[in-house]
Amino acid sequence: MKADTLVFEKNGNNVRLAALTDGRLAELDLYDDNRAGEGNVYLGKITHKIELANDRFGFKVNIGDGEDAFLNAWEPELKECNMSEGQSVVVQVTQEKRAEKGAKVVRNIQIVGTTLVYRPFYLNVDVSSKIEDKALAQKYRSAVWENTTGQEGWAVRTAAVEYPIEDVLEEMVKLRDIYENIRVKARQATAPALLYVRENPLYEYIRRSKDSLKKIVLNDHHLEQEINNAAGTEIAVFKAEPFKEFGLEDEIVEALQRTVKLASGGEIHIEQTRAFVTIDVDSGSHQGGAINSLNEEAAHEIARQIRLKNLSGKILIDFAGSSEYRYMRSLMDILSADLADDPSRARVLGLSKAGNIEMLRQRRRPSLLDTYTEECPTCQGTGRVEK
Image (cartoon, rainbow, N blue to C red; front, top):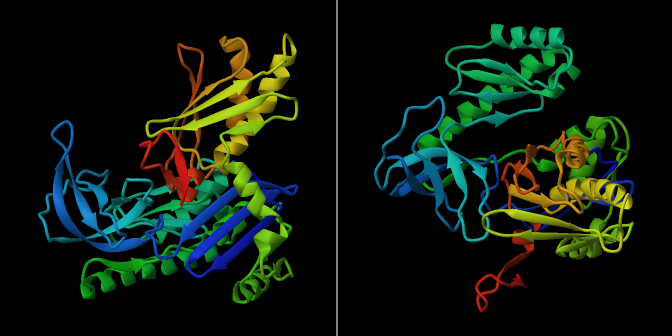
């Protein structure tokens, strides 16, 4: 997804960020500065130990988010930890609190920059597989490796090759300093305490769409000046109520609906459950050869809806008509292509024995539905009410 317009609106601690393509809402990000956002680092306090399957165990950790976060005792590259109630631990949020579940946290901290990811517990330098020029990728990897000091690891991001190597090496120093500052704060703080706040998500959106981005509309004069200075052009524009300016309130209401109407007359029905997301394509009055074009239209729209509604976890899609592999192959290709640059790493797994397309998408933030609504306490989840 390449956005041409970004709309940023902050009111108090609440932030809304929308990405538009050809005037149409393509992605929506909502967050609260007071909540434990993905990427934030905390000094947490262990509240109790939890027995898991296969003789594994985890911990509930108080990070000051209103509900205890979950920490698995086992993590790649780290020794299994065994802590007791009351102990403090430095953790990073990998999945934000949603519905009735607290956040998920890890000890394996990673500090994300523009060109690099600093991985203090990882003894290697990895390179993004999306860098097509492998010789250039190796050149940047070698430069980072030669400047690695002590026990640390790095990941070279796709965007790194768009910057001079000197800029990448400068960012190595910056990210190290951020991590060292986290360590210093952790020694001085009393749990629960916030040690590091992730970068404003707006900048990640700008990097992802820099080739297609034409305008950024926001209600923050400081950000407007900062972005224009960095870009060297008047790309950022101030509006007091940017969401109202673009009619996005109505689009959000529409995005919360279960049914999406297609231009051809068909419909897509989306149901979100605790276990997985089901998507059904209804052909309506279409028959015969028109089913193929309807399904292709639906596949493009489903990819858009996955981003827009932030659908994640297991996703099961039932297209109209025959479920034979020869008909489903092209639809899987459309989904894969449209979600190729998805930061939440959506993957098309294949066709189930029942003829449904199965997908898996990393769960990082609450869905749009979980952000704006909650389960109805009267009907115990069969309906939802506005928050």
